[in-house]
Length: 285
Image (cartoon, rainbow, N blue to C red; front, side, top):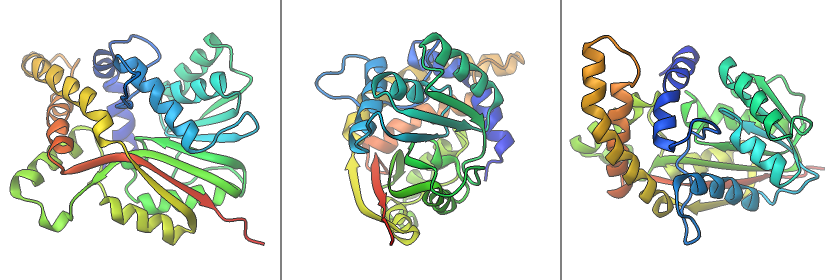
C-alpha cells in the first residue's frame, strides 16, 4: 500500500507529466475528463466532468461542498465560479494547496474557496458540516476506501449528497488472467494506488456505510478517447523516460509512463470500469 508521503511525492514529482498529458502549463486537472458530442479536446472534457458531477449532485449556490483530494483546485474553483457554491478543497500536498490558493485568486473566487492540507481518511471537520462531498479520481489512493466513505458520511449533513468519479475493477479479482493481473499491477504501481475494488464491492460499501438512493453512471466509453490519446503519448515518452533515467535526470517517471500506456487496454478490454457513484445520507429523525 502506498504511504501518504509516497502519494504526495508522486503527485509533486509527476506535475510535469500531467502538464504534458493535459497540454496545459496551468489549471492542471489530473483527471480523464468526460467526452461527449459537445467536447472537442481534453480541456473541455475536464470541464465537462466538473459539470457532470455538479448535475449528478444537483449542486446549487446554496450548497457547502467538500472536494476530497482536490489536487490543484481546478474543480473546486470551477464549481465556485460556475455554480456559486462555497467549496473546501483538501489534499495532503502542501504544494497543491499553495497553487490552488493562487489559482483561486486569479479566478477571483477566493471568497468562495478554502484549500487545506488534510487527510480525507480522518478530517478535522465537525459532524454534519457539508451538504455535498465530491471526489474525482482521488479516493482510489486510499488504503481503506470503506473508511473514507464512513468519514464522508460523518461530515455530511442529513440529506447530504455524495458524488464520486473513479475507476474500479469490472471483473471478479479472483478470475483475472495472468495478463490482466500484470496490466493491473503496472497501472496500480505506476500511479501509486492500491489494488482497486470491484465496482459491486464499492457499491456494497456505500450501502453498508448508510448511503441510500445509490446510483451508478457508467462513463467508461466517455473516457476512452482521451485514454487512448494518453496511451499514445506515453508510448512516445517511454523511451525518453528510460534515457533520462539512465542519465540520472528525473523529469519523467518511467513507471508512471508505463501505467499510462497500459491504462487504455484496461478500460478498452473490460478489465476496468469508470464512472460516477451517487449516494445520499438519509435524514434520520
